[in-house]
Length: 347
Ligand SMILES: [Fe+2]
Image (cartoon, rainbow, N blue to C red):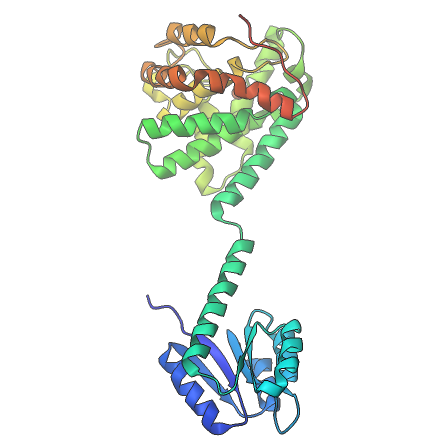
């Protein structure tokens, strides 16, 4: 697809200059409109959109170019404005630049130089706009952080849990060759996996000191299904909700809520299950202290083929051989950043 030509309004009362500049700019891939007077140019600015306006400063002895500039700034603030001026009018041009023109050229104007200047100015304007716009990934990051903050609001000791879980899920997901769309949904599921906690009837369970009673534990076990139900019904969330619902299922069928078994649990769900438990073990919670790396690795080896998919455990254990100490230290850093202090890991 060819890009649309940039539209330029050329304003000058010297017909020969105007036609020469117009013809050359047309050859440089611009769509030019010619105007012989400031009044006509201002009328055009009311109704036609231009990307750039190039105007003379002095018309019949009056500096009416400044009126064209003012109309352009008022009606078409997106457009770049270039002034053309004779030497005696340089001061006028400088003050006009302060009024919003991007540059000026001394007459006689070289049409090639003018074209290059307008091209460059349009390119720079485009980059400024792009710099102010959110990229899609930034938008996802911002909204993900909002969701994580909401979950951390009801359980402050999970500070950073969602973001860390997301990172480890992405690395494991890439290891297993998940396609991009699945990987993105897994990352969203990782951020939101405990979203259902905010809908529990009694939030005090989440920060209770010591173990939960059987009844309290049954209540907390509602959070995967609640999260999947409450996250929303956007078509792109179908898989995300599925992974959220699965994150406490276990390979041997002893998990919850549906006691799914083995490959009845999706691969992203199995990855999320391993990663989420790792991060919980490396974090001080209201009901437990931090586990040391050796103890954590022993736990995963013992649960290989029981709570967790053996392939996922093997891949994750290999990663922990490399990143384990760093990843184990991260929750304490995040808790400290959240002003919650931290405890040293158990020996
Ligand atoms: Fe959970």
